[in-house]
Image 1 (cartoon, rainbow, N blue to C red):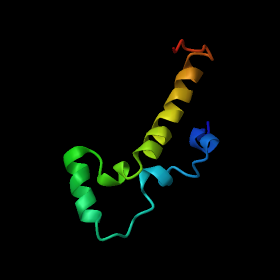
Image 2 (cartoon, helix red, strand yellow):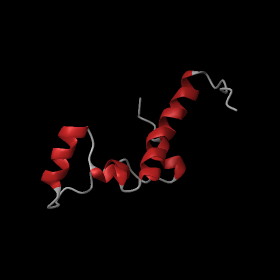
Image 3 (cartoon, helix red, strand yellow):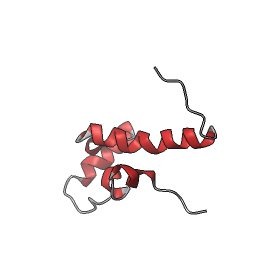
Length: 76
């Protein structure tokens, strides 16, 4: 089964756009690698935290709705 890419529904073009994989050649790579080893992420994820959070949570919320057979969760 092909993986569904929910981020496209909210205008995010590709996973690389928020996983920062597109920045392969940069002098800051060693610094980012050190941050990843120490914290589990690097500073690039905080550059546009609102965008990063939305891109991260949207597919997970869609998955919850899918796994609950479309039952709407009560949220007030």
